[in-house]
Length: 109
Image (tube, rainbow, N blue to C red):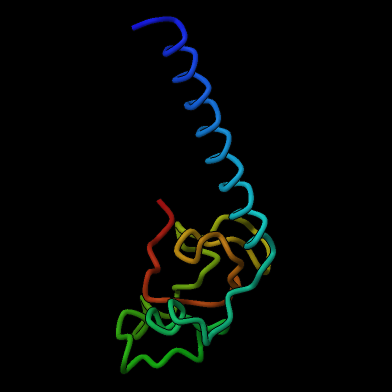
């Protein structure tokens, strides 16, 4: 392989990496600070509610009973913050309500 071909390959790889980094930055900006609406298709599929007390426990028995009553977004391993609203990895880091709940809830380890 000659040096001209190597140089072209390096430029291509650098440009590709730069483009991927740019796309990642755009994706973060799009969702930064955006709250997940309850009528979002993913939210509806997971039974997300901003108020965990509004969850239909017949449809989502995981939230029922004594153990279920202790489940909130703000004590879920996927909730990335301490405030009233924080990013959730299930919803592409859009904001969910701390006192909310969805069926993807997992206890903080």
